[in-house]
Image (cartoon, rainbow, N blue to C red; front, side, top):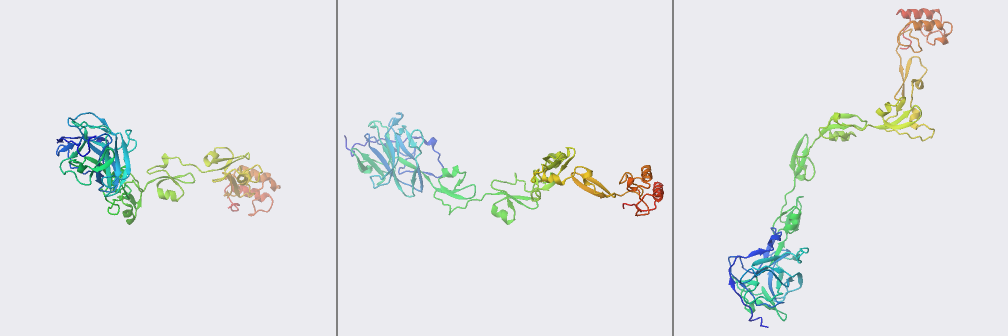
Length: 475
């Protein structure tokens, strides 16, 4: 085997190089290509280095310009004729810096890179299925090594192989070579003319302003995934001022401005929540309000409706367009049964009485009648107070004994019918000498004398003729 000191050959070219693999990179503002070489496609010369045997490696010592993550490696791969087709090579390895020319600890390995002739080959994954991205944390100023290992012996007359630049010469301490049978060497001392065109791509960390107005630190890619705005490589949250988000701010009587929560508090106003805006928020809605008793009021402010125990039906809603839930309560039936219904539904059942809301059909004393129904009436007879001068009525299960107002002499039927007529005269005549037959017929003297006599008959006849000897007995 030829000594590594004498077997390197090179051809000098200036060509336009295509970029292979770069189409898949999610390059962001924070990514920096780290290199030693001065190669620029189509502008600066380079040399193809073909003196490698299988298993040997070319390696570039690089220094990260920032704290971040190594996300890709690049290798310029060229032949003299060009277009030799793709070549499966052994591996590309990222190492810690170590002590030149020996790399440090292995950080990541890309097995079996497929190299394309005439191109700057970029790799962002450790596998050909692109399931495992290159992701090596790195600190600012930290030295790392990118090493390319050959599987094939480059054709000495054509290549393809790795290349070096010719612009700055071979820089000391930055270019290494692993030669068989197994030793790391300084490639500059072996006559290699320039720096290896082998590079790393570092995604630098920086401050990220998030939509919430807060700040986090990370790469531009992670910032973009959070819908943030990357503030630049090397920036920190302590050195940037992130814009604060605005939201709709409502203030009386009917104002709205898009402000930060801090500025909204200065008015003072009420912020409407993240993401809100005055274009979509209704600050002071008014509409129909369903009350607890089932009634409905129009043109009520939402806060007033809620404060009063009602349920707001929406901005610009009308009672004519809503159906308010009716209160429920015990509906007592005359047969002793009980149902829980609304007042309107209960009223449709004959001889029923609604006990009000909220009541139920509980029968705690287990007497067969709901407790609340035991307090209700079902006809006027349940309400009779025995007073001829009152009108007894049972309405919606409740008794009332309203004082009656009737003309003097209006005694038939008992309690009167509002007029003095023949029935009243007949009542007095039938009760002559027997007051129990006509209970109200004892008319005179005013205050009665406990019997129906001629004076009462004459008084009734006077009343029939609209001549009143006494005042209304039921004032």
